[in-house]
Structure formats: structure tokens, C-alpha cells
Image (cartoon, rainbow over all chains, first blue to last red; front, side):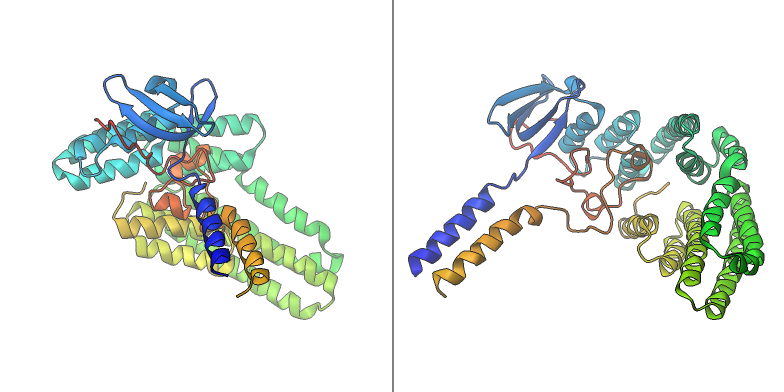
Length: 328
Length: 72
């Protein structure tokens, strides 16, 4: 019996040893992916020595790696408490288009050495310029493909994270083109499932929904936090009124088909209300009011507990709050 | 404990190993490598903890283990 147990333990130990501990995935500029363990780095030759999963010893110069992998190597070599080097890696991340990594490392550099604050501010100004240009480029590419939902995401990033860049004004104006249309399409899809009687009863709610959408759009376009907040709060009031109407209609109609139709309307309205709460959370995050931001995100999750954007926002805010990292 | 009990236990453990290597949370996916995440940052628990997500080859949130010849 003991020998059986020993054999079983040996099998388990072997299986654990077979796990790819410390395995790294690197991408080369030519599109090749290399998986293996890094054995050493030669700083003079700027070369990384890797034992691949196939057991081959390979070496790659940093300039052979793609921007992401190159950043990963640089970030791995930097001492966590060296403010100057953190700043250099932040610049590298920014130039590689890894803006969130860059912002976090600028924050770390400034925290480690407050005398670097002015330098960090200068580099952040460059980052915002580059990021704004890239956001607008992505938004235009999405519009060209007819993907207005994706375009809207980029325009919203511009408005919320880079409000002082010239592209933000352009983004606010561009929302005029598709924002209301994409949402009325959602409502039209819900309409298709509804009976004529339900359509008549929901008419007032649809008007309020349209007002909610308009206020959300204007909130995004508003210059100034208090104006935006007022519009977003107005949008939420409209949303609550529509939800109240849907509650009443669910009491009026108890047949499963109509219940299903009212549920479709409810989903559309909840989607918009969640969006509004997340815009408000973004306003608070920019001001580093993490408690206020969490309140808004939690309100969004109360409406839709599995909403992926809200769950991700909550995780980011909690982390930023606990680490004192910069958000943007 | 006899061998009839032990074998299924070991089998179950071995079958569970691959999933044990996976990320701890399925609620928030790792979106590293997408253009939007490069702007917003990834909300996956491993990424927020400054670790690389082994399930996503595009994840650069952690560090490489570079055991020797580490120079700056």
C-alpha cells in the first residue's frame, strides 16, 4: 500500500514538474512566436538567450522582437525602485503604443522620485498627443468599416480620457452622427417582438428613452464636469421612469410572450442606464475620486451584475485606489 | 485507502492540472493585445497584480524570469 502511495506521489510530482514554470512567449517582428525559458540577457549585445520549448537554444537581439515583447524584456530588466529607469521604460511603453502601461509607470516614477514630476508631466503631454491621434485614427477606421459601435468606443475614450486634446472636440461632434441612431436601432429590435397593444402602451416610455439617449450624448459632448453630471443624472431619471413603466406593463400583461417582449425593452433601457453610470464613473476617476467612481460602477452592477464593462471598470478602479496608481 | 480508490483520485488530479494553470477568474477576461486594452489597461486579476497571464500570449503585464547575466 505504501509503495502505491509513493508511486502516486511520484506521478503527481512529475506532472507538476512538467508545468511550464517561468515559460515566456516572445513575438518577433517577422510574426514568429517563440515559447521557452529565458536563460540570460546580454546587455552589451542587447541579446536575449532563450531555451525553446522544443529544447533548442536560441538568441534574439532586442531589435528582432516586436514592440510588445521588447517592452516586456525592458520592463523585466528594470529595478522596481529605480525611478529614472521606470521613466525610461514608461517612455518605451508609450512609444510602443502601450499607453496604459506607460501611464502606470509614469505614476510609479513620480511616486519614487517626486523631483521627476515635471519631467513626467512633459512626457505625459507627449503621450496624450500620441494617444489622441491614435484614437481618432482608430475611430475613423471603424467608421470606414461601418462599425459604428467600435467607432463610438474610440470617440468616448477621446472625450473621457483626453478631453483637452483638439481631437476630443472633433470626437464630441462626431457622436452626433451615429449615437442616437445605434440606440434607436436597439429599441426597434425590441419593437419587433412586441404586440400592437404593448407597442401602444410603451410609446411614452420610448419617448423617455429617446430623451435619456439625447441627455447621455449631450453629457458626453458637454464641456465641464458639472454640466455633464447634470445631464447624466437627468438621463438616469428618464431611465428610472421608463423602468417604472415597464414594471407596470409586466403587471398588466401576464402572458409569457408579452413578458418576453417587456424583458427586451428592459434590457435596452438597462444597457443605456449602465452606460450612463459608467460615464459618470469615468468623470470621477479622472478626478481621482475613486470612492465616487466605485459608487457609480456598483450602481451599474446593481442593474446588470454580469456586465463585462462594469466588472472590468470596478477591478481597475479598486486597483488604482489601493495602489495609488495614476489613471487617465 | 486501497488502490481502487487511489487511482481515480490520481487521475482526477492529473486531469485537473491543466485547468489549475489557467487564470483564477473567468468573470473578467484578459484582453491584453487588443487596441482598446492598450489604452484602458487590462482588468484581469493577474494583469492588475502585475503578473503575466499564461493563457494569453499577448499579455505583457508581468516580467520575464531572467536568471543570469542580468545587466541594465
